[in-house]
Length: 79
Image (cartoon, rainbow, N blue to C red; front, side):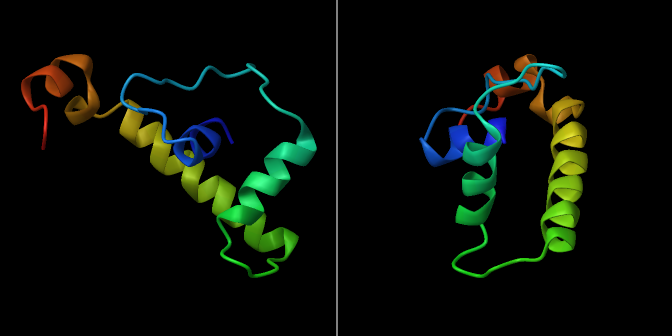
């Protein structure tokens, strides 16, 4: 939710890192944000669960990637 809500607000995600245990927003806001990314469809709970697991896995990999490190971001700006 933290990444998606910032993405919706056009906040630069390069400097953001998810902090486990950090709660932002309400459950209702989180669900509304997820539904916004379903593009008008009405997904099942299973689809929402699969989407959030997949997104979480991908974002964790991204956060730990050498290509997304502060040094790489500074050196490869604009790519």
